[in-house]
Image (cartoon, rainbow, N blue to C red; front, side, top):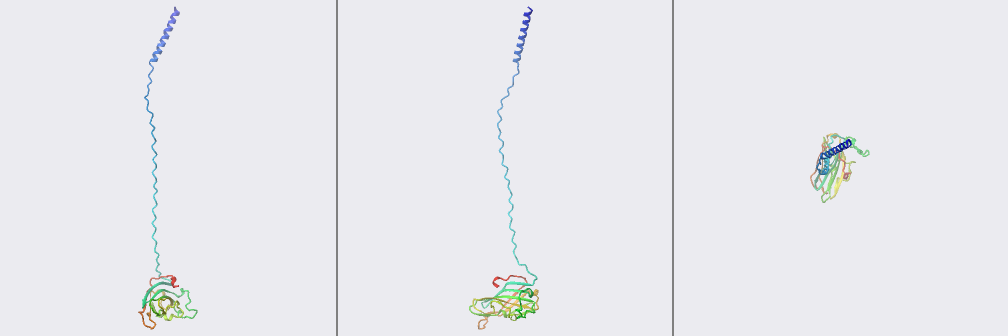
Length: 241
């Protein structure tokens, strides 16, 4: 009987354990089901904004500098001065131009003024001058004209060009008979005995007007008043060489 009692007790214990186990399973905590979240929408990365185009400032256009106008500076001192085409006059349809004038210290001119010892008039002339005439006969008949028999006044001196005719003239025959339509280009040298180069600031050249073959005057005398105060050293033009 004790054995049956032990068996009964063991059976009761098993039933108790089963009951406890069942009770425990019925009280298991409910697992909370989290709501299903929608998958995150893939947010596109913002489009890369192009970097602003770098504006390169253009260098300012360089304005060309004004060209300096070439001017002949006045010469205030020196040993030789020269001018071209100083004056012209027409008398009796005969045009005469002072095409070139040179004044200089004689030592500055590379020329033998003695013509090999034949000419002595320049021996006492420390200042010399050269004049080139252009004589154009626009009339319809031959004329006679004599620029090399005129007079020159400068400083305190009056020069008679006739004294310098021998051995100083050059170029074409510009004195004497000139035929219609002819242009004669020629010149001569003369000198100053007392007038210094610096004192020759103006000059007068004068000679008789043209005449016909019967010596009848065709027009008034030529008188050129030349202002030499603006010193120049002009090169001789090709047409006068």
